[in-house]
Image (tube, rainbow, N blue to C red):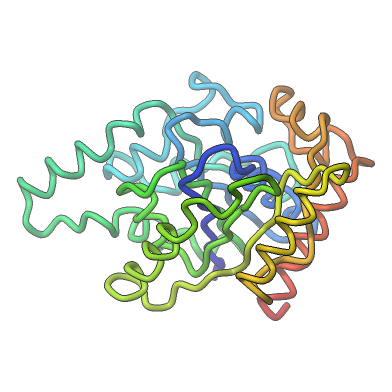
Length: 261
């Protein structure tokens, strides 16, 4: 049965999609059958693995609307043990469609569409990684309800903890009302520029706030890591000897270790 992990932070530009792609790829390299779900209407996780809108027949919007099954939407990528359910701009209209369905059908479960959709395929994977959009709307709530845990990426820059309280309140709300088993898998420090003092100060601040929830692995800010998505590859295939490749491989090992494997 797959462990479902959302990677979420409503603040943009924190390395959320980069971490979703590269953690999923790293788990695959560790021998874990992994599914990446692109739950962002920008579709960056999809293009980051080399897919464009015309490359697939189904997407996560159709899955959540019940127009196709999750199994029908899964695409096996060319990367080791890695599959994806892609996204398109259509996902941006999901909130409106959900409200419409809820008004027309009293039994429609607004926040359980993703959970119910992926339940039949969970036995086919070891890990399911969900790349959430930078908001706390219905799609992100669906991800949290469907997940066992959440990874919160936090960039090593000024105002790093801005908005974190709102995210934590949302997690508590989901735990209290919809998914009591949801827990914080860990806080991931990203975009560290080791040449600046502010990065080191942020690390200290985040570790003081979240304590043992912070992963030991820190993702560096590297040009090659930023380039990789434009070539449709995770960093491990684009630049196998990169420090970022090693960092995400170490993160994958931490995630596996935290889950008792």
